[in-house]
Length: 109
Length: 112
Image 1 (cartoon, chains in turn blue, green):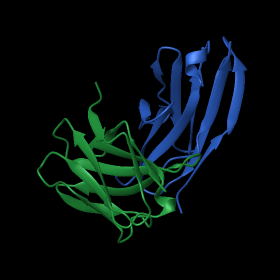
Image 2 (cartoon, helix red, strand yellow):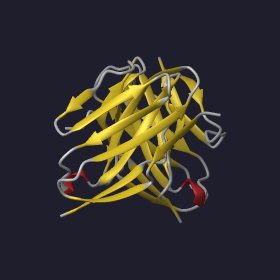
Image 3 (cartoon, one colour):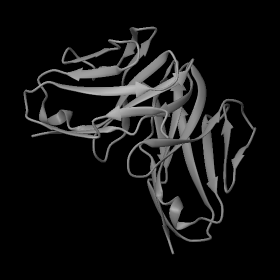
């Protein structure tokens, strides 16, 4: 059975802190892994990672994939209150996404 | 502006009634999906639809569910005889040949 485990389950930090969110997966026929941010409704796309060891960066967010060890991390530097959300990791299995339970991030001002 | 529009944004229905959730993907992508998220739980895959046919479905997608693309644009999820446990957010998504998934804004279904 495909498995995606995200840690920590929840995290409370202060503005300006740096956070690292973890995602480990056991997914057959792995193709790529996606990170999403979910606030009130739909997940919004952050990154798609296909190759090991290549960091993807967007502003204060960055992510990297390790296909040998089957995990990915999402880093957020200089956190802001607007970063408060659920962060979802989802490997692509075949043509579908298999979601983890998410990490709830709360950034306090 | 969202690339995938879902209607309605919220639907309340009585147990046993049929509901149709609609999705209008603006692009010409061939891959479409329905996912659902029960409050406080994971986003779960329901069904994928490719070239106007179901390509894969999950165990959740039983006989009470059906999908179709009746007019080549709208993509619908029908739930026959709704149950209380069908209450969830339902998301439509599209992808470009299995990459670059974009989710719609979702329909919150409440079964009473």
